[in-house]
Length: 425
Image (cartoon, rainbow, N blue to C red):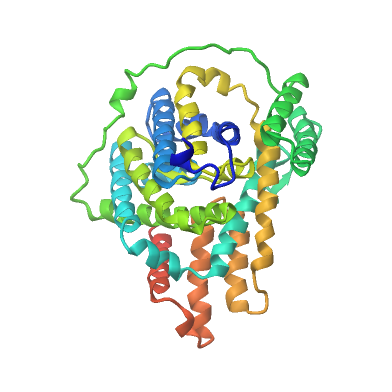
């Protein structure tokens, strides 16, 4: 195990990797229920969606752990599942079986990019200011998600966002949990993030924010799932809209993952790992279409495992095995309060904001598109849409200032593709 994962070389131990893998799992386990619920709106049976999410997450984490030896967490992505259900199926008029075929095609396109020099060309074409902005924007999104899960921030008809009920058990325990999490992290207490999740969960349940009722151990039914596994439909293969939608889907998947993996490799201080991480992610997207779910991404929750000390693929494999074990513990998973991971998400988000010091504010052609990405990722609740605005504006501003030679030719193509994606939507 030491020889394969090179634990000493990466300054970690088996204990740290297992702990980080467990924390990654606890932080991301919500995706099982959330993703299945969104897929159900597309017509995929709920329990089948749960099984598909679990199996895809298990396989994705194992693939990335073995292939890239990084603690990246591959699970169905929030935003991409919404695009699958609400854009492609409900608005586009395609069936969920046809949408799964589009996921499969998008994955093949992704593989074609990740395993060829195209991946390096695309990555090198993205300016450092935009790369830093993506990391910072994701950090703010994590903070927003954390406060939202706690009910501290809620939606409003008048101001879009508003302060929620601060007297609720979830809000109170989250704020207490946040203080505890920060203190434990600053003191470098072993297993600090996991400990904070346990404490916040107990406090929330003790104050009446949740309960242990309904816990039982049972295997879900695979009979219904067999109607979803491999249920890709090619009936619309002769329709040009089918292929344009697949291309649009692929573009969003590719650029979102490039942004996420850049952020993760930066946290690990291992920029060399991004190539294999991207390749593993591409293969995982292909498997998503076969297993019956929306595409996987190198999720933002990866940052939790990295912050907890995860440095190698062993962290991802542990997380994947725990996801597989979720088949037995779905009722227990549903008991973990949504706000229990909020302090962890908020802390990680704040740590990611530190990258803002790397942005040069002297040149508006660099800083303005970057700052828009930072603001729009959380405001649109979409990493891809926030990125798109900055990627379109960056070359436009450079051209208007007569500095077109500073732009990599591939960035023009990327900007045009993003424009086309907005037009299609």
